[in-house]
Length: 298
Image (cartoon, rainbow, N blue to C red; front, top):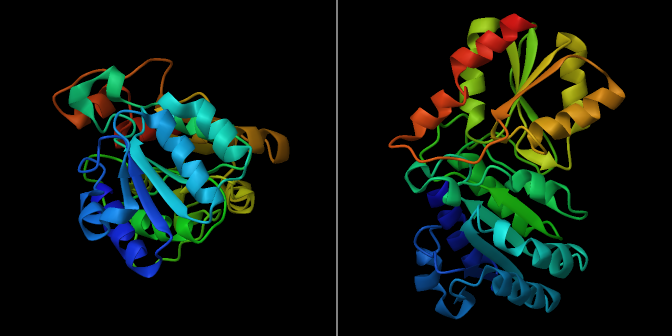
């Protein structure tokens, strides 16, 4: 996903001279080094000063530029929530935020570098769009779409390689979910790295899979159409079970078409160190086997 983000930024840079890139001392890690070489006068490394980066970007946006701010998801939005809330959202500033190394995809660095609460922080803010693409192909489409939509937006991407579950010909539109597998027994709603796992599980249980790449605004119509058919839902996300994608779905379903919902995600804990990414997914049950187990408990 990081490579796709970098490629999309280069493409945008060539298309639109108003596109700018900002980072907080993490250019190569978030794949903005290519943009920096190609457009040095439009690249800004603010150092380890994430809050200042947001203030700078807000000013740029209010002058008509389209700034993209990229850092690790634990720092963006973690270190600069107040600036995002006030400088961006209250002013409807056209700033795009990109949080990389989300969830457990940075296993070696442990809890201090693993963001499991960023979706919750971002989706609570008025005016903020929240996007969590399923793979590299969708990441590139999301970046290009964000540049053409006015207002603040947050894109959540992983550090590790992610299973490719979409194709270049698949449509992508901010605010629209996609049913990527038809099924009858249960609706599996997933975002980001969990979409591929949901697809694998669905093959074994006749599940219908929704790729919920836009978490805010929520595509209520697509979700409701599916659950009216299946009558039950499991949501799967590499994020806390509090305030994330599953919470967004449950809030809507409980009011508009109440059905049983199981939220699968990270429990009320911080992250932890591991040698391998898969070790953390296994420990916290973000696996094909655990989706099937939860399905059988309905």
